[in-house]
Length: 599
Image 1 (cartoon, rainbow, N blue to C red):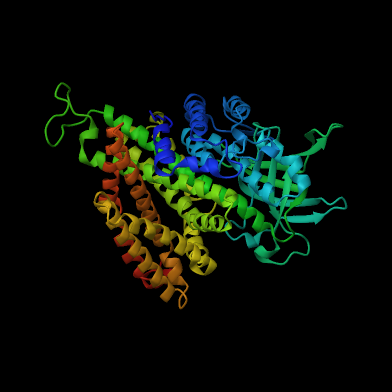
Image 2 (tube, helix red, strand yellow):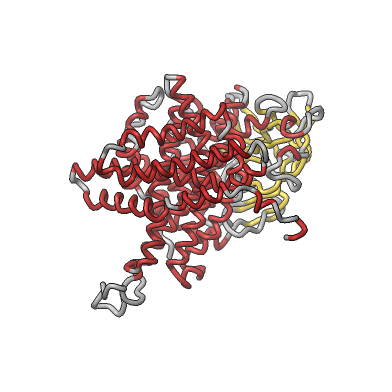
């Protein structure tokens, strides 16, 4: 069976010893976010994940959502679990206290997202999308919209979605046909159809707030003519005391629920709008600016789904490998009193387990670092510090979304391989992880689109300053630790990997302007090359913390395991950067030479 226990010790290690989360309490507004407070919050979240959400993961997959006459019912136990989630205040952990939130740092939100998605990805998507809607409204909504809707999102009584995709357009949002007609009262009539809307209809909350991309009558073509509208399932009404509740049903309804490969307990809906009332969010014809707030939050959230799936897959594979007896160790029996040895003694099984472990531990460090950067970008009193943090976030967002989800899927498949034929059997649980993981590489922009975003937007943005900021961060770490004899085994390979990134970037600069296909041909390989290098940087930071831990002598086995895993990553994973650099420099010619009709 699949297993999951929240990795609190590893999260605490990264927060306190690798990243120094205590620095967050020095930022304005985060004074109460001390390490002790954060630890207590994570402990409570772990109980919810292990005792409530994870037990519903398989049953929710087996039952799925029920759709009838436009109404969706979530699987048995989901409504009760959501009520417990909402009553515990988990919906508003990082929301502004002015709107009823707890005002906790984004770093805490990242750790919570990992645990929630690891224990039950389909469930976590319901409140997860609400967070993105909250952020978009908080940054671009009018004061009236904020006052009316943000408290309901923060307390979890209402939820949110993002409605972008239409039958004829996915990535190319310039093809959107949904129309918005102005009404005399300042609102708009929205008409059109959206597809693939996660949590578009369900029974967990009183109301669902849809953020919808649509076109005004006089809008220019392409993405420059798209506006963003808030379209609630039920129109809000206020009583004499100003308290907001649900009123009459709006003209937006679920037309169908998709039958999917995975995340079956989350309703993926076709949403039809027929003169549904909506309210403009942000400026007319600038909807993409507001939607990108939600999309960037969603992309990082999906990256955390990849990490969560990888963690659950790893834990399940380790548990099975310790118990499953098959064959004898190549170097002699390790379980002499039994009929065979546990498969964890076999080198190839260890290769699979260490590949999973070396990803999850460095990925967690990278993700929580990005969480701290988000907090700096929002709260640091120094504008230069805020700008530097934002540059790093921009660079790392497509890397985290694409690489984490690629590896989440790989780790789930690896867990199935560790189980052997038993992994293919439904009741053992890991085949669900394989199915659930696959969507993460597709939604919120396929991973190929993330790679194009990295190469086409992020590398050249601000004259290349953001890219230099990331590469400079890594180069600074190398320079600071190069003379440390203990760190040489980690720093020298990192320096070489950084050189490969710079070499590949130079190749693109020299060739992509002459032939744009060069950028497209290199994009996926370059993203992975940068991801592996960033992960190695985090392993370097983890190694420094581990050496300090060993000097303190309090938990030597824990810290030694960190160094062993780091050495595995350097020796067995990082060498991929060499082949990736060769692939990039092979250019576009062999990709583009084949005539379309010859495929």
